[in-house]
Image 1 (cartoon, rainbow, N blue to C red):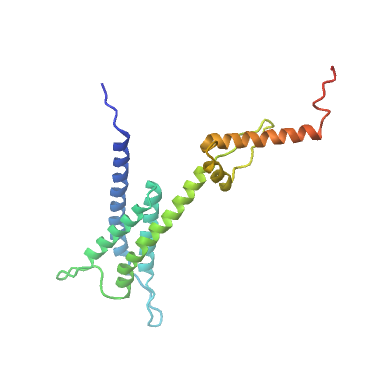
Image 2: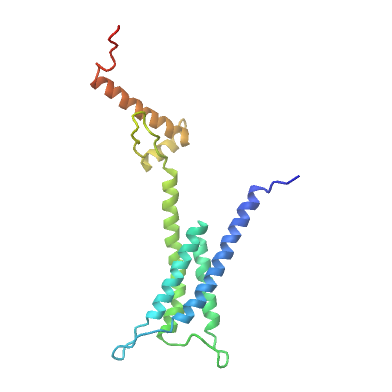
Length: 200
């Protein structure tokens, strides 16, 4: 006999799997970014740290991907924090060992992660909030004439949810049915001959 696992346990396991994936992705992005950040272009004595810019772009892309995959905006912050911790450890000058130096490339890479992490978390939150809002808007079913009805607006959904008698999907279905019935009455008024029975 198999025992069913409670739903709360599944949610907890899914949440922790997202956090672990974010931490692993952040460590990998930190390692790859550290190996990339030192590249620069020196035109006429100036410094163009394109390697650090590409490394920060890598961290931002990985963080947003993990957040959208797990549907948790906080995982973007966890990913950035893991990348920052990895870069911080690699910046320690232990004898002859040290991969991040105190120059423009190193400062942009190391301190840029601290700025990128909350920004990617905020951007992922905006994207996920927009997706949830779109999922809450119900779609009208196919009308009897075979034409797809209009999508209910967000204002319609708010009104339906605030109405105590028709909240949720049932209220949306009643609104759609009322709209289709009004369209049918209008067509009957325009073409009364079609509703007339010639045998009467």
